[in-house]
Length: 343
Figure 1 (cartoon, rainbow, N blue to C red):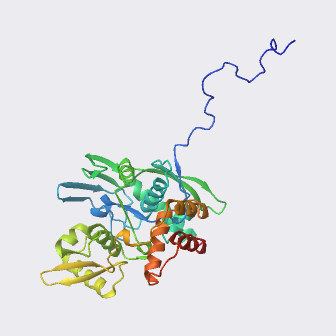
Figure 2 (figure 1 turned 90 degrees about the vertical axis):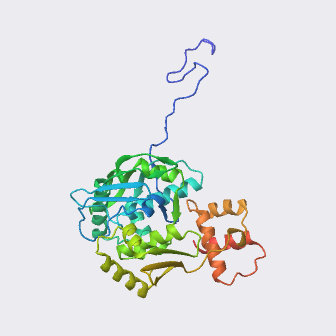
């Protein structure tokens, strides 16, 4: 039988045109695999007191209104999600933003390694640390929000959980959580896509007291690129979401002023029951730092696969400032040498 008359081999499509079937469809989740992603927080939850500052289960119904924004927070029987539970959301937002900046596709369903999350947020990696992480997932999923907050340029009144769902996908023999899948709320994912986020100091995760974390968020949100932000104690009390009486809140502020633990900011009390939050160092305009070429960023990506190279560049420029702004013959080479030294 000639080749022209032989029957087609089994399993071979000789129909001609068209595309081959997609044997490996794109996954509908994003894998958190970016090392050293810069911490990012969404503007909406930085501005408004969604998270509990209590160290005990907080089952109070919260209703908050400010400048036309209405927020109602309904906790589950396990209590409202806490400011420390928010570390999970910050980690997820940080991973998504680093991926977007690198030109990768993202999804509001994320697959992550619990150990990576614990390390990135400065949490204990013992067995108790994994148990507390599981409890945090449950509080985040159980806390319901109804709000007309604007995210991504759209104002929509809707109700949602802080996360839509979570699932432990694998356990080791010792019972530890190894990998989990988290689906963020559409509201939070929309904020990420709109890049309605701010970068946090890595020292944020070292703050132990809930009120310190909350005031750092407010300072970061309201100072922005300004040197300072002045606010009344009453307004700060409302925006913080503290359940303490005003006099107790005021005493806590004075203790924070004395201890001076906030990263990047200092607090001062003024007559008239006012607080001034000041930046420790006003950032220079971006154009005053060493310029890096696109080729330098590409080379940095090759040296540190998965890293947020723009965050690395910001850290390098900070190091350059702190070392006296030495003269650079070749900024690209100096940056890449610094990146190599960080490995």
